[in-house]
Length: 288
Image (cartoon, rainbow, N blue to C red; front, side):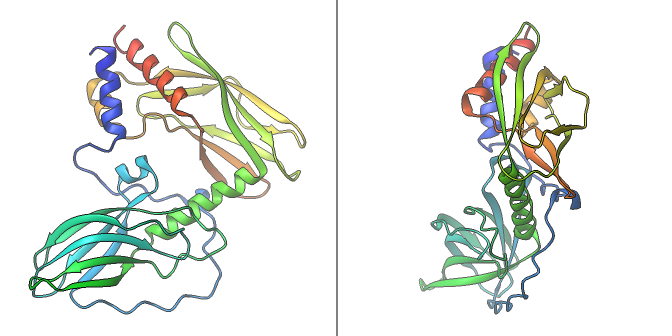
């Protein structure tokens, strides 16, 4: 495969144009914050003839900021959905997304739906989808359909756990430099607040790239200082199947523990230029 072809494959995959998808893995208990202790919200009334669930597929997790609103026509008549919007107090509202999905009785269709910035001071429930429904005779309704499942709670907990870590320590990748058969850089952790111990215990790789820290883990950030960890990126797989199917080629979770808290996976913050460097490196070594 030519280097340009590898780049094209990765770009297409990142754009979410893959084949069959599956639900994303649920965050482990160690990577999520405890569930909110606020009083349970009053459940929303059901909508006759429509059932809803929020799910996150692997492509959604790779793209970020998106879930699927899974609607089912549970009534005796068809209808068409022309817009969908996530509604939850735990997420900033974003504009409704225009769609065109016609449901027959018993049919289930997933609607890709963006969600806004997480509000860690608010609970998640009630979770609903605001949808515009057009009936067969032409009547239009604006409905608020309750969404079952714990997907949005998991997303909320995981993102708030990361926010709590980043309030204590900043994480950056610097000095990314391509060598003959590897790409090297430095993972930099900088104290932002407090004096609790901050420990790095693991750096994960993607299907196609494996980052390796020079320092033996775990390592601890000094109380009022920064920690610089040299890192080397090696190609993990070059076979066409891996290059075509990977949905997160440049996602590398750094496991960070603050004080007595749980280990939280924080993705290395690579900018577009750094991702392009790694893409070019992968294309070169996989065709060399």
